[in-house]
Length: 513
Image (cartoon, rainbow, N blue to C red; front, side, top):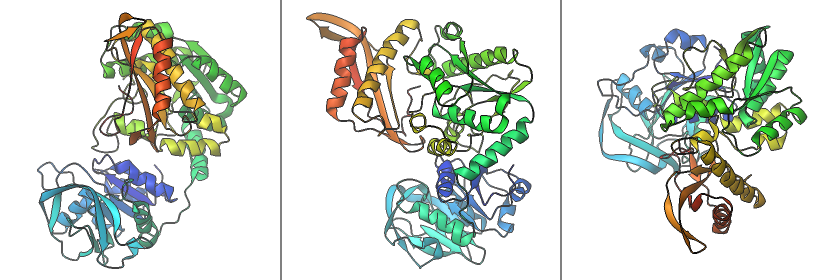
């Protein structure tokens, strides 16, 4: 646990909570997210300069509502409540919260009641994002209204004597046009935080943390050639040098020529020795007949650990397993930070078996993908490596709907290769966050060469995003999509129909499984 955390965010289950941390870190202010139930002793041990109470899906008046240790209000620290956090504050100090006559979801125009320092350098009439079904009916004693919207008379409130502030809206989301400034104003002008945190300081801290955790022991680092595991390997190389054992597992679920590309990249660009293990037969045997997505992920995760465990026994002193787990993986896999809902397991989070004996080293599990890319550049990794699209640990196993088998894998590899070739050729690869092809295992009737066909359907999925927590489908020109479809149908036996996924995240996830 760090003993100097300028801002501590208490998580009450909002899917936006991690964005609060991201916005503050963009402003150079380091913060940590902890569960709402965090003890007052652990909060004090972090020596914070301010506390933020996140939003959440519950109602503060519900029987099982989430409440923090009330001692946080006695610390004398500035506090900012957001949505659910605002209602908690109001209720705690004697105000009332009731169901709203009109639930408010979406954009609203924020007007200032006063020229408060939390609104410094932001405009009156700015657009903010509302997402609430309850409202403050009676304002707690000592608080005053500092902002309002058409449907929220208490869109912003403050008790300046106690240094407590609250917003009914979500400043952390993209749709709140000056939300980053509002959070920075709270940190800078109210909490008196300095903007000193950056990827350079983060790299130094993580290198020291790895040294302290590992000591003279060896670390087995599972690498995939993707951005995350490559950055982890670079960090470990800086921290422990020859005690790093980098292992690449060919699980039979890779894209075309992936193995050769990864081996070349580690040899020529990272200058690191790489052990390659071909475990494709083992993975495919374990996956045979399995169609449930969660079972697939857990089987893949457990098989990886078995392969790593077998390799580790060949090297004396390996007690640690390093992985490129990101904050988004943690949030979507399991509620480790608070009451946030599990979306899906990731093989390196929710898919790890109970019998695993390795101690995990996960230096990236508190940062987002865009921050990982900046960290990679800070560590001197090549730009073309840093710009690679994300590729999931379970690989093509979660891009085939239903049973995973050799025939379908070859069909999918060929289709995916064509899609990526067209994306690179047109310059859209670098303009998008992630692009891939899914084999739906849905057959439909077609006509090819005057003959009837009854073959599979491929779905192209291309999205734009910043951190992977939210995403929108990419508006790829129809001519490019047409070329992708034409080539896939003409060149890949077994596919006679191609569709394009136009759903965003949320409500969909980026991957199909």
